[in-house]
Length: 310
Figure 1 (cartoon, rainbow, N blue to C red):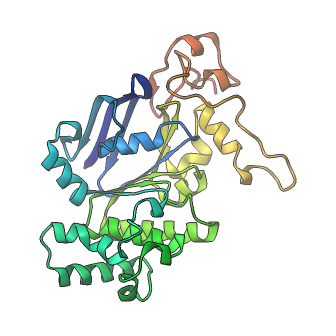
Figure 2: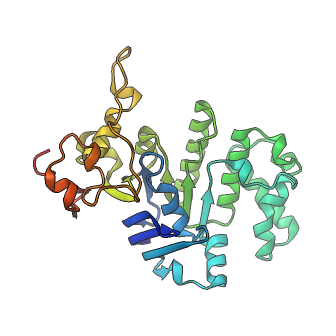
Figure 3: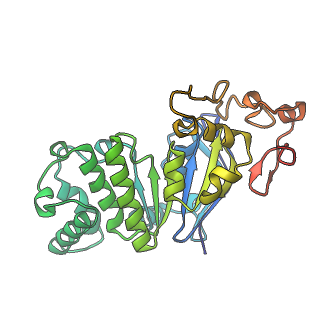
């Protein structure tokens, strides 16, 4: 069953395009990775799902969650969706948790707002912390964010996201501010818990290997568009779009030790500066004249004029 549908989603801020014709489905219980260079529109795509958009934003196309048009929801419907059905895990946990309130206040606030008695809310918060690998959970509830490490605080944020048993988790590069070892631990916890609960996941990351390990499908974004979607298990062998192939070739593990790391040639484009035709045309080594003038149709799994010859 399809839980989330983005249908030709377009977004502009103060008249400047950020997203162009983004179409993507996420099924119930499925994990979809959203990958691409910085500025490709990944975070704004996810924020559009819960209408966390800046002033001056105009939206085209549709975002549907469980069949309901998100951008047509009234205030009460949007609040209910954000507090019960959809949870978000941001990049920097210290920007999410109020530094002057306790961890317990942060975790139990939404449960208390839903009418749960204080004692029951505390018990559920302790249980949720334990499930994401936080030891001595009762004591942690009395601490403030500055008393916790970055990795521990991100576990708190994940625990908060899981508290209301959401049907969808939006994870916006949740390991960016963490060291490599802690990154692996946090992602393993998030993946384990969402599988145990049957929760869908839309996971933003720059790490292709991480996306392939955690997700069922991968959607590749560039310049405000999705240029390729394919099963995670086939990412390395069956990628067809030149941009996806360029990203895979630029991975540290793609070259032998001692060899120079490859890069994607040219300058990354935004939706504002991208060519009128294929958004990757200016950086693609295979581009032809029509690539710069004609917008490719998303066929099969990718949007490229040259799929039959590459």
